Length: 166
Image (cartoon, rainbow, N blue to C red):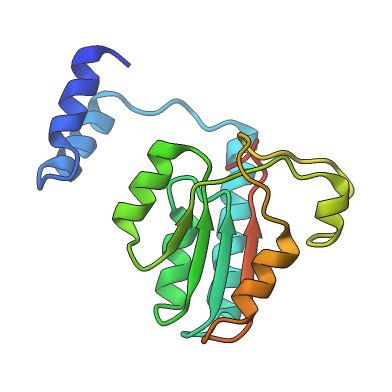
């Protein structure tokens, strides 16, 4: 991204002209065709949103690991506005943006490679996955135990994003 474009983007971001500016930019610079992996990711996201709408009660609690820009978190908040939610995003600029956009959510700016031993306690997958960058170690059992002890009851929905697709 050029310095001029970056500076202009910082000036426009968060102002009333941001949305029309983005629409104009997309019209002048149409996006490249979507790859098969991107199309599959769209299907995955759509299925995730449907699961959220079906199982997450209004006061349900959710955990989004690998939150990125908050697309799934936004859907979680729409489905469960009265719940207590946690989001994990290791990239500082994205975590700060999430804190600004979702003040009611506990945003944790941490990540850690997930080893097979840790993953077995939280998922059934046998393929190794790693987070986007390293940070502090929060075992899944401790996170879910903390969520279950909240005033809102047990964790209703959890999402672990694969670093290569989110």
